[in-house]
Image (cartoon, rainbow, N blue to C red):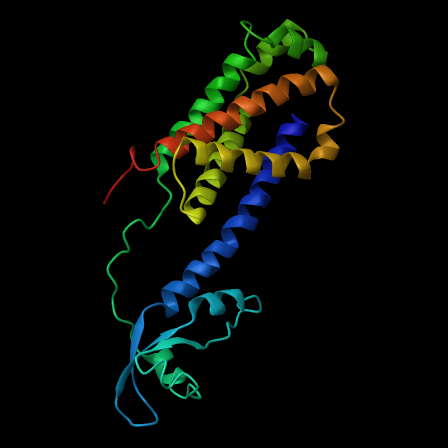
Length: 241
């Protein structure tokens, strides 16, 4: 139970470490992206400029991104200008852009399906049909104790939370890298699983060998299941507005 609690907390921390910078970057891009009309300070004629959102996002650590222009309708002839119109560009409304084709977002149905499938694989893996006896022996539990634990809600909630957090982290990696397909999904899930295992190796190495083998086998199956489902169903089972 303590191991499950620790793993849930660890996954929550990893999720925040991944998602908070992404949310900040998204806010910067939505704030400064798009062409903006300005009056060129040199000839006082209309021009259209674009703010360098990538540079702004990479310099936002202290809360105040560094702004500069990435493009102008008078460039490249006047590319060496002093960018005196930057303040006006920041105040101006950006042109509304049509949604870019192929832009990725996280689709929730494949994530929920993948998390449920991983949880169900775990239920079968730890059942009496496969490795329940070995799992009980490794933990030093009796059948009566395992039966009593089975009626508690907390173990099921914890394992469901782990599967769901892991599935959403894999989906975020797929969306960030603009990848789809079974192979890409499995690859992203394997990379994340390896990173989690490396970060928590000190706790994992203290497990009894038999318990480690059982849980490692389940982790591999759950990783493959989540990666294959999310990668394979990325554009096939979605909720569209």
